[in-house]
Image (cartoon, rainbow, N blue to C red; front, side):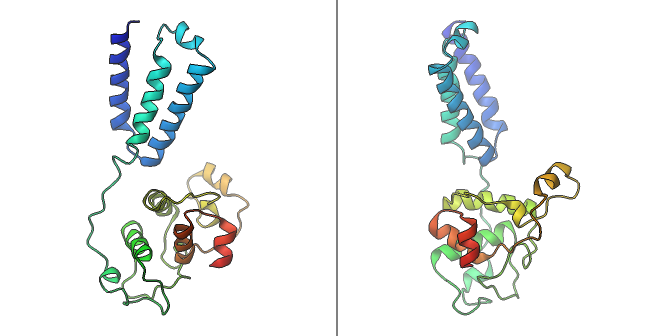
Length: 209
């Protein structure tokens, strides 16, 4: 297969993947898979491209992964919501000694946009997303992905099933969650510490919170 035809196929595949995979996390994982596959075909399995008569296949797969990785946040939802009252008046409904630095304000804004903050309830570092704010697993998944992207937090050993029940109708997820026992509060203080350290260490965060 000549170079021009291979290039045309590559561009077509890239355009389809580019507009179909819009979730940042999925896009990143797909990109890493393509990068690893391209390197594998180049150095470990070069005969695959020869058999398929597509000599540039490893290069194209690698480039596909690279382009997707570079544009992994391209379709991320832009946040243009008006600031929550807590952010316009930081002392409103905040407990004494509640941090009011830029990091906490950004965290509160993210919580407001993804989960929703109560207007008449005092927020504390001990306020939990799952028990006090009524956050469910679906909301938590979207929030944690946003936390990872916006604050460059390595989620490490974060385990959603430790804090949230899986959907009742999803048997597979319920099986994965089996054995977690009673749920543990996931607090604003834990999120704040995770952002400060850019990492999620469950034991450290739960002990300090």
